Length: 83
Image 1 (cartoon, rainbow, N blue to C red):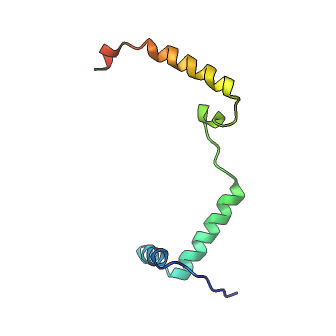
Image 2 (cartoon, rainbow, N blue to C red):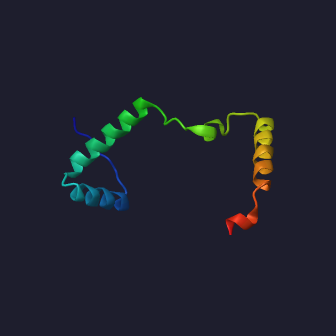
Image 3 (cartoon, helix red, strand yellow):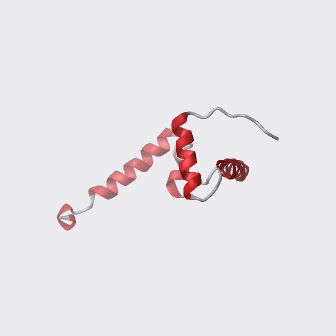
């Protein structure tokens, strides 16, 4: 199937240059990019690891408690050893 897209000039120049660097036609570049986007959406969002995975999902009281623990631990660091 054929379709027509309106692409801003600056973006088109970037696409054309990137396709040329990869040795692709603009058509092949677009198809690869669209397929990659669809596959990424199908795979779902990337899972964040560690304590950052809770950011924005835990109650503010829990964040305050965690911040207090961090502050207490960092206050015990001897600054002279870090110079």
